[in-house]
Length: 110
Image (cartoon, rainbow, N blue to C red):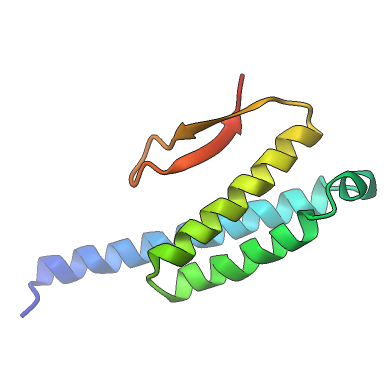
């Protein structure tokens, strides 16, 4: 039998997982809708398919518990970040995220 404490923890983990997937989708949607312009798309035509993949994988991340799908989502977000920083003419670097599970993420090299 699962303890009440374990159920509580699992419920919290699920809520956080779903909240973070929603945040990721919202942030990408805002950048794509408000920042990405036709000249950016001409230079980076894959931005539309990457954005679509993020929207789809973000939905899957909310609905399922799949490390494989979560890693696919992270890969697409990293692709998007690379393009975003390139548009802003900023160099990037790959670091280990400072939070669990410490996966590699693309960040501005400032």
